[in-house]
Image 1 (tube, rainbow, N blue to C red):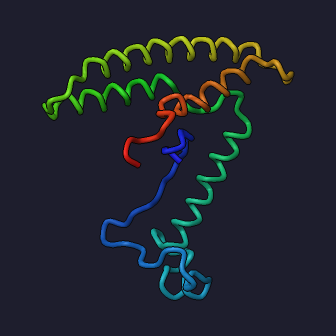
Image 2 (tube, rainbow, N blue to C red):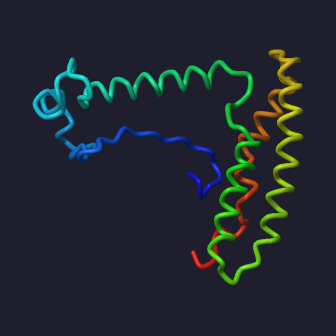
Length: 156
């Protein structure tokens, strides 16, 4: 999805002493889980991890459905971009990263303005079609698409 500029989220539980072993196979059944995945009442079992994961996804979906603004923060995105740009500069490649640093600073300025406007819009939330939070949600949700190159990645 990130190649399409669509914000997405993923999370997983990892055991420090190995992997789960099966991944969406024909063996994913209640009897397989009972036999190999651990008992539902055993702390740290696959059953408990899946139950906890389902609760997290449900809370996340609930929050998305009941919030006036999409919970994506353009200011945090600007900080992450700065971190990545600084990391790229540390590699000391024969690459001029000054234009990138300038673009990141410009983005951070625009992000701060968008954040201010969206927080202001929150104070005037209405259920009408012209609710100012609708504009904010569209801008925040489509933000990453603005980073795409029209022709895609070179030689791909």
